[in-house]
Image (cartoon, rainbow, N blue to C red; front, top):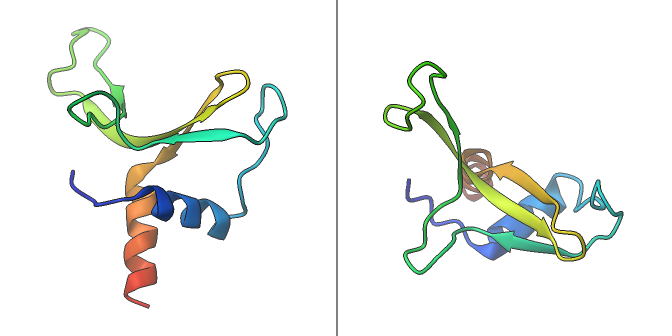
Amino acid sequence: MNDDLTFEDVQAFIADRGGANPCEACGTQDWIVSLSFGDKGHMPIIASIDPAALSLFGAAMLPVVALSCKHCGNIRLLSRPTIARWKSEKANG
């Protein structure tokens, strides 16, 4: 998936959809936004696998943006396709 999302896109999406709420675990509002991880820019995902197979081959996957609380490490996930769709709708008026 190449959606060309930027940090600024995620910030704008969060602001447009009601702002960054406090962390559910500690109540602070200091978040790190992660669009990718590692040297190769790996995209974070949620994977859904067949419990009988216990394999990621053929798994259903949802790309996400990870928000990590700087204070306690709590992680909040946002659907990357939802943000990309919002960005496209904003661009197309």
